[in-house]
Image (cartoon, rainbow, N blue to C red; front, side):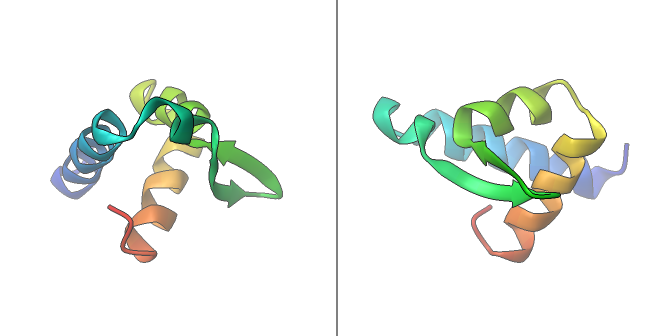
Length: 65
């Protein structure tokens, strides 16, 4: 993994930890036509899947992380 991906992963985890519980069910990103809530995105990111990497890329591009 590149340092950039790991930094984005850490930023995402910090943002996720600061979210109030009810917001974790809100959709944060759509990848390949599939919507991902914060909670689902967290699972993908924490498991270091290809989808998780794509989620990080999109959220970084949107300046959410």
